[in-house]
Image (cartoon, rainbow, N blue to C red; front, top):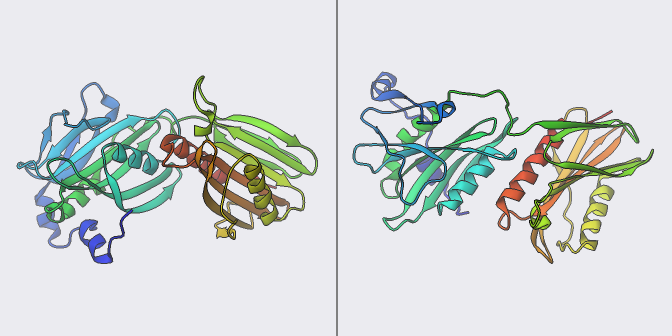
Length: 344
């Protein structure tokens, strides 16, 4: 990712335009759109007067495109797309995958974590034959549906459109929320020894208990591979509680097990403090990338402490560049388990 100066960020990712509020309202129109054949995908946003809906056809095609909205000259435009994702994913991870499919590279990102997963304000650049394009993308989630709103213009013209693009992004709203907040249901797990441990996890994962005793408990959440698929492209989550264990020990032992299976990491860095979940006194973790005989790998690890003991949560899987979808599935599953984990 390129490094943008503070001045460039302010110019290309502006907030609400300053000036006469009443004049601004008169220059805008509140628009609603219901895509043909997709009544649950209807949405609303505000755009300058005179901007027009455009046919869905794009060259090259935009995945999941519902409609585009363009100024009369067609230089500045807003693309609204929607996908029904097959698994629970963070909207920000899905957005970046889709943009990369269209040849965009990331210039700047400001993310925010929500109960539905991370969302982000993304600035990207693409280089089609007609010349370089800058784009600003936001996203919204409603169950299995993830909406992407991308505002783009030729790079040399983008700054003059940037304030209006902000308005379109800030006023976008999906009008059909649906019944479920997440893309897939969650299952629940509860165990008693060596402490009462419970959490929720995506139902598509397979839970396997490896150790179950009074002093130690260990289990895996495995993302099943379809027949013929490479299992190395699917993540595995591990949870382990061990009576009297310190966080560093749990982290070191997990990494050593990965190394014995062929993973190669640099020296283990210090565990960095993390905000602890409810009912925990402290938390720490780390993110590692490494390699294995099957390709590049990623490890995300956190240890949570309380009076009752410590719990390790780890996600081992492919690196993002190697398998973006598998990486995103594991990342989101890690978040859900972390957010719902309790120990008494």
